[in-house]
Image (cartoon, rainbow over all chains, first blue to last red; front, side, top):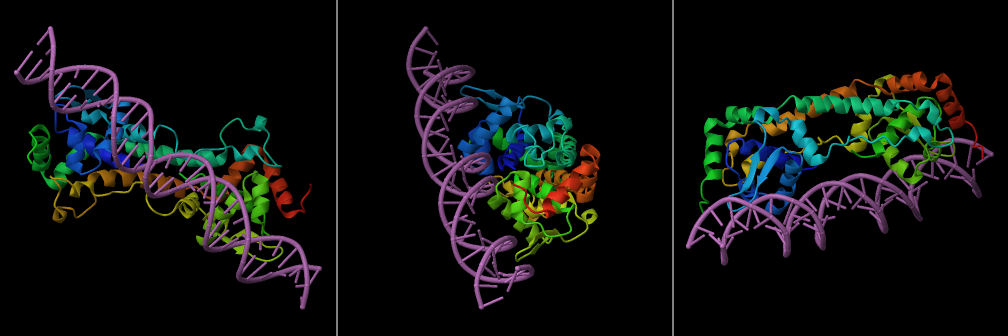
Length: 159
Length: 159
DNA sequence: CTATACTCGGACAATATAAGTCCGAGTAAG
DNA sequence: CTTACTCGGACTTATATTGTCCGAGTATAG
């Protein structure tokens, strides 16, 4: 799994704390990661419609939807791509004892089992929202944590 | 996910049909894939103890356990490695507003949610065995399919 | 209205990982 | 004892990920 998923998720959580646009460079500094590379992940989120980009002097990124309606599956699919992790190359139709294609109406048993497991994974991801994560952060680190993040994001840079 | 998982799973299913050792080259010819590369996957399965290698003139690979006691999770872990797909780099402990390490007793909420989804995936894989796949193949392609595979595996090469 | 400074967006390298290949050590058969 | 066939690990290539850069565009400030 792409490591950018972790960055994207953390960015979505902290964007919960700000109603004004936050520049990508500010998010990168907050997390102490490469700003040039984080931009790529944010662009993926923007292409997927999860965040909206505002250009200009005081621009940046804002969540487009309410945090309660953004699931972890949305973020993962936006960053890692919508395709399945297991790809079936139809091995059964190759080799000297290949199954005739006329008998291959549905997916092969191997692919069915692997895709069923992936569906369970997706369902678990779809059952958690960004709002749930933000609430968990409040429980873990106290409500003042996200408040100070919000202040740091919107305030002028303190060097 | 590594593409070798598909090859390894199909090999385990066909090994169900043979009680005598099957060489890696024979398995590769049956599936029409690179023999040199399939050897690597089979070595992973052997290291994990799922299959046993027999050397010498009429050697090859045999399943060590009964097909009913080999789960898809066993095979996936053997080929793709036991580590989790999502790796937490502890972003919360970095940057100007880093969470103090004293407050980080458990995993961060992001990692917890991602790992919970992976657990659901693992549980789904652990609930299916190689024997289940072999039975599904019988249902899909008829019982004669695996019988002919068994004959082709054990018989002398027909050019 | 104009100039400016700050933003995103996509195109361009470097690196890590997966895919594929090869030859030597070892072993059972003849 | 010889031989031929097997696995096992080391090596090379291809691909995807990670990381970086500069140009297009826009809201702000004068």
